[in-house]
Length: 153
Image 1 (cartoon, helix red, strand yellow):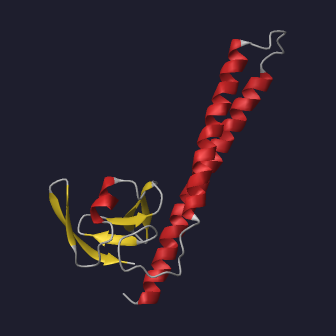
Image 2: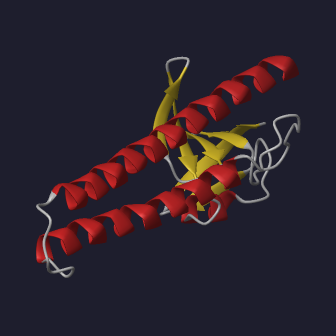
Image 3: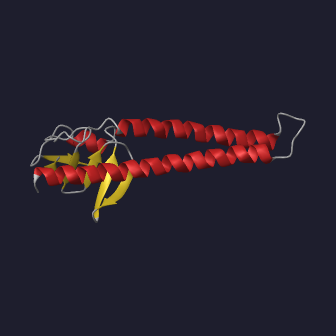
């Protein structure tokens, strides 16, 4: 695969992750808004500590915390420089191994790009830690299984 093809593929991988993260954020914003509306729709109560209303506001606050966390993940994703051609496994790289193809970015899990399965993983996960700093052709052991790094870009 030519260097330009790898950059184009990496851009598609990044875009798929970005879209998935934005969708997560939209879903949380909708849930947060729904919880706020539910709290506001309850019949006006003279008691400001109405249990039903407090429960809905608690839900809204929970979603607000999730939203903040997901926004930080999106910010982390934006730190990836797509113009850099990686030669070793590190944050921002795509690593194709004999086990799976991973994009070291944020923990989004499984997704598809051009009919291929990829996993967006955080640099904090053990799989990344096992192969950190390695190059194409290197091997490492993860959970008792020998895994070869086929390609890094």
